[in-house]
Length: 144
Image (cartoon, rainbow, N blue to C red; front, side):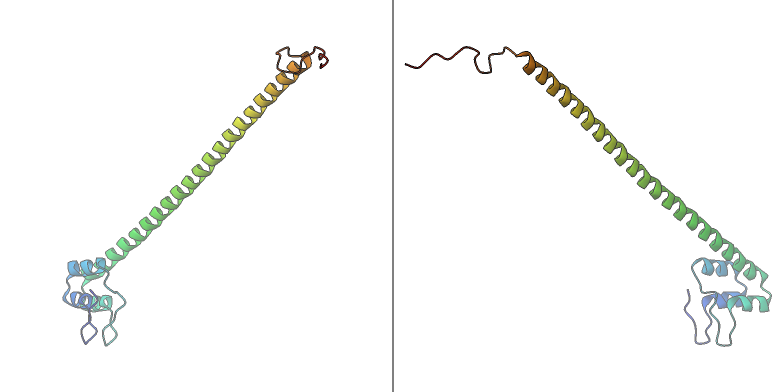
């Protein structure tokens, strides 16, 4: 697209000299270098103006508008992607906090249940349990 002749003229320069506005637009969309100048210092747009090819000038304007629109759309897409990423991070953080809260609640409930069980065991021991599991209340017989 930007291959220059010995004179420095690129395909864009030639299309502007010849008044080929559709070719100019196509080259601009393909990324032709608008700042390139010929050996005598002319840019393609300058050549189009000198030759009175207003359609070529309009092609430059249209390409500039398209480039600006594409730049804005790219910025919007980046902003949307960044926002989505931030929302994902926030959702993950909230999920982690919720999971931690649930684990803490379960642990608290388990501790409360363990305390109740320990309290019940303490009451049974004070009441004398009668389960026969402890030492006998009868006096020991003398050994012969």
